[in-house]
Image (cartoon, rainbow, N blue to C red):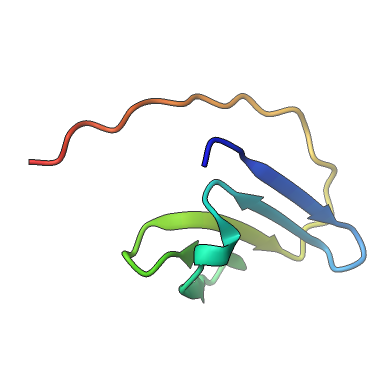
Length: 71
């Protein structure tokens, strides 16, 4: 997937960023700061969600790099 999805839900006060296919979400966990990390069944992070987000989304810079080959 080459698309990054940013979803700001003002009513629900969340900011969600998907950099993988949301349909592949298998497990998620939330940390003490209120950030949910969504992973696929292989354990790869495919999205994050910030809970209690009340700010305004800003322009973001996105850098895409090829991952080094696995050995």
